[in-house]
Image 1 (spheres, one colour):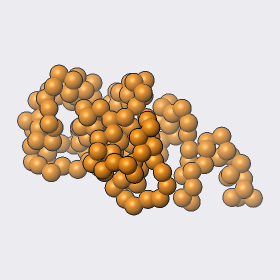
Image 2 (spheres, one colour; image 1 turned 120 degrees about the vertical axis):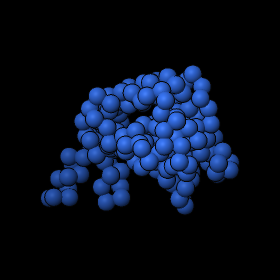
Image 3 (cartoon, one colour; image 1 turned 135 degrees about the vertical axis):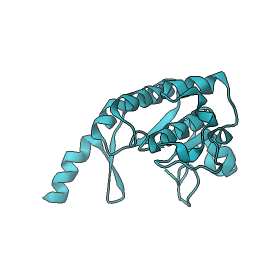
Image 4 (cartoon, one colour; image 1 turned 30 degrees about the vertical axis):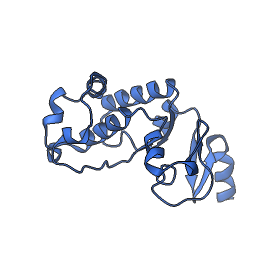
Length: 171
């Protein structure tokens, strides 16, 4: 995913909604393609410093993620890993990307909060946002995905072919 968002060197061609990655500056591409890593980055001590807006839309996202309205006044070191994860997701959503790359977006969340996160992800997909979600939770993949791939020895294997691939590996 780091290669897709142009943080790591890569080969090949990436096109998103007729926009070619190699024809634009990396910072412009990253506005179109948002990466939400499993551990989000924090560069200031205050949560609110990480957001460039306090719009009603952001407040709705924060509420939908079951975060308190005053969280922008908190110190980052006060946040749990699940709060950081949800805030990183909110930070990506508020920029209205055309693609979301989500690495274990609910790894630090309980079941109820995971479902709230999944609901927002599905809403983004319905709006036409392309989503790549990496998860170790096969049930989550089945709940969320239109297509499922497994990563095995550096290769993507479509879900429908995984059984025959396992047989080849073990046979």
